[in-house]
Length: 216
Ligand SMILES: NC(=O)c1ccc[n+]([C@@H]2O[C@H](COP(=O)([O-])OP(=O)(O)OC[C@H]3O[C@@H](n4cnc5c(N)ncnc54)[C@H](OP(=O)(O)O)[C@@H]3O)[C@@H](O)[C@H]2O)c1
Image (cartoon, rainbow, N blue to C red; front, side):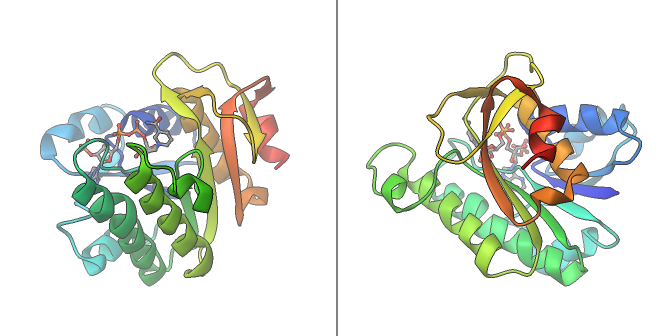
């Protein structure tokens, strides 16, 4: 399956590329923003496309998604400004979904934030605007598209090595998860169609990733 990764140069997505390289059933196309980011992917035999969610049009994004089977959205503004959060995490995500539908892609996997919803959006903290942006991107995916969606809600991302041990579900208390295990989870989501039209939180736990995801 051809998998188009948006935010491919990010930390989660770099782990995803390592797993994709070892997985004969996944052929990644990495969407990156700068030519100098291509080396990492070339070393792994992964094709890159140079595009930017803000600067490029929906038509240009759709053109790059031709013949793609699934899109993974792992892009984000990070701490680069609240305007960027709206442009990338919200409108960039909607542009990506619209482009996927235009290109005839059915499968769309969103890396969301841990918790969304009205109560979370009302909290006046540093993450408020980000939470609102992610909430409405998720809502758009669920309610305004015909895509076969999955929304993954990871806990606090850490850079320690993955353990391949997670717990999944909704309504859990926030905790950490290594980025490597989020990447593993994304691979399993692509392999398990039982995850279509589902969302779930993922944290470090005591069940192997593939087993946890296949039982969702
Ligand atoms: N931090 C947390 O604890 C946490 C918790 C839950 C969920 N998340 C979500 O998980 C996602 C993945 O995390 P991560 O650590 O892998 O993030 P990351 O390393 O910051 O990666 C984000 C990627 O988005 C790309 N990007 C930024 N603006 C873009 C644009 N205009 N067009 C296309 N791509 C753009 C960046 O590209 P460049 O490399 O070119 O800058 C970067 O590669 C985050 O985006 C966040 O929404 C985070």
